[in-house]
Length: 87
Image (tube, rainbow, N blue to C red; front, side, top):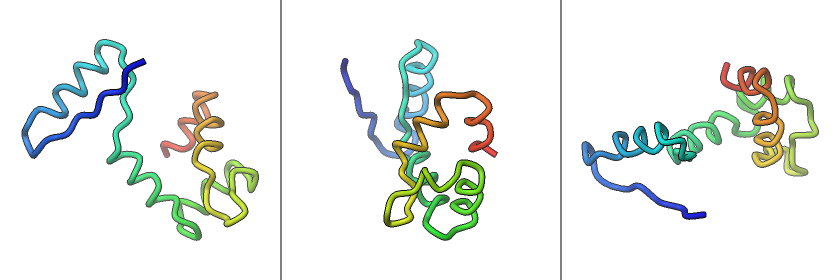
């Protein structure tokens, strides 16, 4: 498996290339989306409270931060669970 990183300045074609990859069936991980999700799930925040209420405390680390790999595993195993998180 190859991992490719897209970088560049504003209007350099990153979104265009990302969309071409997606259209070709190549999985994309958007670091901006990941960063926004991590910020939205900061311990004690409204998003954190809603996700814990929806998925239970088993998605938390001992520090009470969201265990992102565990949450991802749950969410990507079910369309309905993924839709719940996307709300």
